[in-house]
Length: 183
Image (cartoon, rainbow, N blue to C red; front, top):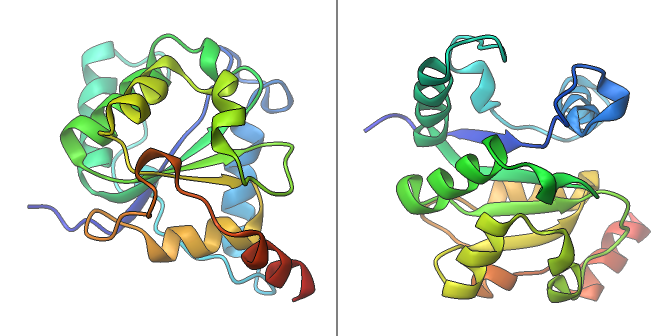
C-alpha cells in the first residue's frame, strides 16, 4: 500500500488553459496559500507526487497517473463552481475513482459562498457522479465554502480512516464559522 498522505484536488478546467476562465484559479490559490509564510494552510499536493501530465498526453497515461495520485491520497478537495457539473470526463472520473476505488472522503469546496449549512440547497451544482454517490450513501462528503479556514481544517482532519459525520451531507456548524470569522 502506498503512503497515503496527499490531498487530491479536482476542478473543472472548462477545456481551456486560460486560468481566469476556469476553476484552475482556485487550484492556484490553494497552492499560493500553502507557500505563504503568514498563512497556516498546509497540505501535501497529490499532483506533485507523480510526474506531470498534460491534456496532450495519451488518455491511458492520464488515467494511470490520476489513479496513482488518487490511491496515494488521504482525501480530495473538489472545487465546485457554476460550471463544474458540465464536465463530462475528468471530474466525474475523479469523483468515481476517489469514492469507489480509493475510499477517500471528498471536501466539496463551493466557490462564491461564505458559509455552507444546507448542502442539499447546492445540489444543482453537483456533478452527476457526486450526486449519485451522495444519494446512494457511498460518498463521505464535507461541504464547505472555498475559504482558507474550513479547507485547512478539513484537510487536516478528514482522511480514509476518519470520515466527516453526516455521510454525504457533512457540514461545519454555524458556530464553527462564527469562530473562524472572529479569529
